[in-house]
Image (cartoon, rainbow, N blue to C red):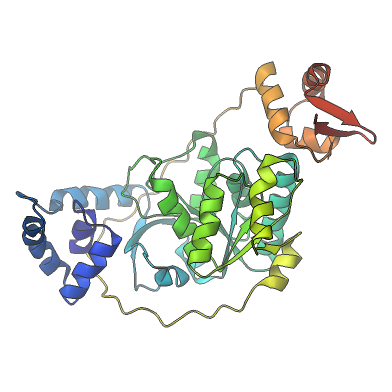
Length: 369
């Protein structure tokens, strides 16, 4: 429990944690004892480390959710993640931890993915999974959810910005339950923590850090997806991207990455051909924690799936979100929407009348220029 107490203590971040552990020869109890004195020297009076009762409650919450802690240096801790500049000292894991031993690739992209982007994401995840790679992503809307669902049978790891027992976004409730059953959910955040804006960049560094390479499918110029790509580059990992139409803002980030040196890919075969051999540096020497007996995990209840609204305004918004400057076949659009064709036809006609959508020869649809 001392490791967790130290990690959850106020003002103890990743770098401070490892500095304290180094200065005390890996003795977390000694590091806890030294904290109040260090705080006083920094001008902070009446400092107290995280109470034991707090971490005991977190440990029990993990057991109730069917999660277990993985500490850096343990065999289940992702090997590549240990070599980033600021690896998380501990991860909560919910699901199959054997997946951390397999080669992994990050697939990331836009939340408001286009129809073409969705198809590319699904094909990539299926192809890379069939080739033996675990697909890693952030369990967000759009591309993240698509690649997780496509890789469920072959292996997927979801890195979340909140606790592993927190469902976010709500629309991914059923997918979250399925990943917990046959994949793996990881987080460095405490159990029960609701995700906040500042948590997502920290989540992104883990997505990139677990993976040999990061593959960007669709991304705007200012997006969390590009933050993940930048972090992958800073960690010395490969970055690959699918090019897109120059007039589609969802492709602007990918096109910029390719212009700046990222590898252009068209599908899973291109990814496999371009991957560098994995040469991990020696494992860093880090002390391992004492392991307290944890209560027997209890399998979490499977949440009920959420229902999608399908009123006219929502259908029109979904159509516009799936289309871009590059034409898409109408039957593909219908499959992506998963709605009755008669409901879509009326809304499509209205969008055409408004000039928002143009119909092209061969049954193709695109956003109006």
